[in-house]
Length: 185
Figure (cartoon, helix red, strand yellow):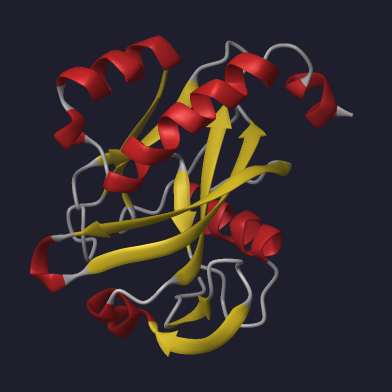
C-alpha cells in the first residue's frame, strides 16, 4: 500500500507549484491537490464509507467512497484508481466529473485546503476495505443522504457536505440516463 507522505501544492488553476509533507500542508492550510471518488450501484445508490476512528482527522465520520491525494508526479486518475483498490479493496472504471476548491478547519490544528478532483464510478461487487482506513460502509439513496445531511450534517466530513450537492446535481443529469451504459462499454 502506498502511503502519501508528500502532497502536490497547486495554485487556484491546479497548476503544480511545489511539494510539501502532507501533515505540514494540513497544519499550514496550503492549497494542495486531492481527489474524491463517488461510487454508485445500478439502483443509483451511493457507496458511503465511515472513516476509521484512527484517521488523522474526521475519524468516525461518514463520507464518499474514497478520497486521498496523488503522489508527486502521479496522474490524478491513476492515483484515484490505485487508492480505491487500497482503501476499499476493488477497482472500477472512474470518470472525472468536476473539481472544486475548499477550505475547512479540523481538530488538532489541522486544515484541509484542497483542489479536489471528483470522480464517479459504478460498482456493486465484492469489497475488502482496509480496516485501518474504513470502519463501515453502505449504499444509500441520494434522497436518504440528503435528508441526513440536512438533519445531522456533523455526521459527515466537511468535504462531503460541500461535494454532495454537486454530485447529486450531476447524478440527476447523468446517472441513470447514460452513465451505467457508458462505464460498461
